[in-house]
Length: 435
Image (cartoon, rainbow, N blue to C red; front, top):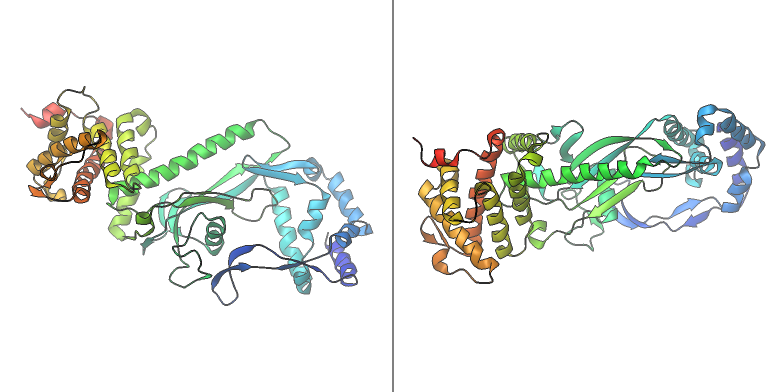
């Protein structure tokens, strides 16, 4: 291949001027260190002249090697990839991979080494490595990277990752018309997961099953992060989408896949800093939430966590109130029928609460949660709660403040429940009426 590239470069230099590919508009860090979005034209060899290069005697030697080597022949003219994406590998693709572009011809040997090394690693590999990033706009920390579990961390995006989330729209800027990112904006946090998939040659029936299992795992990671942040913070930052890309170059279709999650105006404006204590709490909460089989067994806790996570993305405070109270019912009333649910919810919330952490007495918690149950019932039946119903520690407050206080009680209750998950639900009667 090296011999062929040298001969090809000499032939092309004698031919016509290269074409200009207009390129697409994309983000990229330029040589001055600034991340910009613009069209990036690329000089390319003329197609007809590249086609003729495969008639050179040196290329026929390359084709012979491809055909005679057992491992290479097995991949030639086959779909090669993983459950996440594949493409046809043939001699034409091999030629495109190793042939430097016109602007790389000045360093022909260096360009060939880079391109050939990538092809060689891909052909020799038994597995393909991927990186998934979930952007977390507004999150900062001096503790990055925060390791949550093996191959899973919270940290800053690399330039390649940041460009990918901007180019795909998985991360949208507050002012979309901006053409460059200032230094205080070109560092963005993310949740990052690294994994590998077996390389598959030819069509395989297991691909769809592998893909569905992978998607379920990735969705579980995202949900755990959303629930963990909702457990720890009143106004958590939100995940804005997902981008999956190869850890290193690979000649596959679908090398970048993405999902966008539109953020509400409130979510776009949130800022959150993880200090040393908050980082440690996030790791511990993650450990509790990821206990194998926990939420499959504790379905009531799983429901409560989901609804607490949902409320963080609601735009209307009434919807937030409903989510918080659904979480409260699942947390405190999962073993009861409909009788006196409001009273029991309030009583159990008060006995499980920690007055010092909440800044409320247990009686304050009881009164708040009893009122909250009534307010929730009025909202879901289309009525508006009256000011006399919206009291925190005996003081009338706006609905938004009432919901926030209720949410704080449920958040602390859920964290306590996770710590007691092995024995949940507890002996409520014994806690409320000890002997």
